[in-house]
Image (cartoon, rainbow, N blue to C red; front, side, top):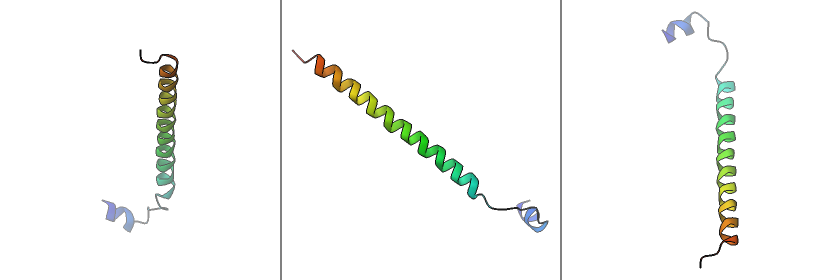
Amino acid sequence: MLRRHYAEGKYQGSGRGLILLVLAVLLALGGLVVWGVWELGTTIWHYFAQHPWQ
């Protein structure tokens, strides 16, 4: 089926745009994860700084 698609000349362009979009989304999600872990860590840090072990 793919070979027929190529042979008929229906293939147009490359998947470069789709790959860039997927990479951008993955990068954004990774950034959100890093930000969330950072915020969680600072919240826990401040909590234990205000409530020391006794």
